Image (cartoon, rainbow, N blue to C red; front, side, top):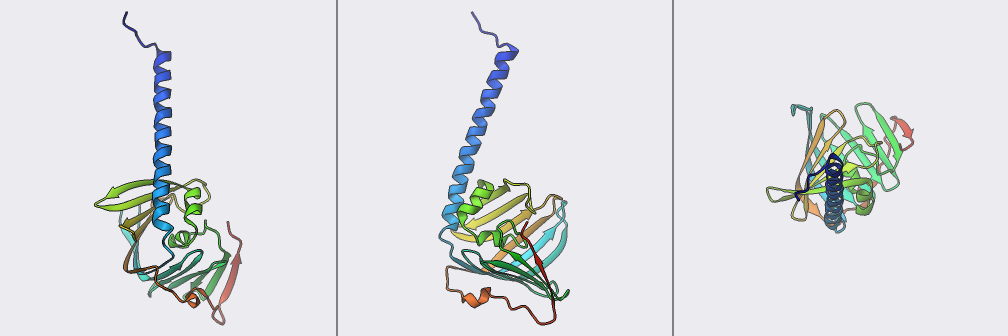
Length: 217
């Protein structure tokens, strides 16, 4: 006798398929997180020039800036944006300093991995902490390895972060916020795991500027 699926048996089959898809997605996410950890764990220092573009939700460029960054894990970063959008972000492993010379203002905040003055700051922490805070997905694009991170917690300043590697070399960061605005950062002149003077990660507050101390979110 031919078996005819009843609505109930169809619903059961659909639920079972959905559970199977969820389980497969979790396995893929776990494998992607392992792949990302394998890329980040050997990365002790990083130095590069960068080109940063801010795009609106339709892809139109709102702003472009260039600069240089130095990173030493764990927790240390210097991010300098050239004129006319001059800005300096320094993390010494305990505090983050955001200096805006045009405003003559320095904002100081305790280091917290949710702080996203620049997405590169997230990379200065432990890879394990990063993969614990985000769902990680992996794909290949024209031979590059692309990792997409989706925040687990809603209290972040972005909804998606993509990290691109050419082999073992970090080459791009893309960040998308809740309005659909995207920040694209491309690196050049890259040096990985070369010594960096720790003085690079100290920030001396200039005389006469306003200092604002904030609590981490």
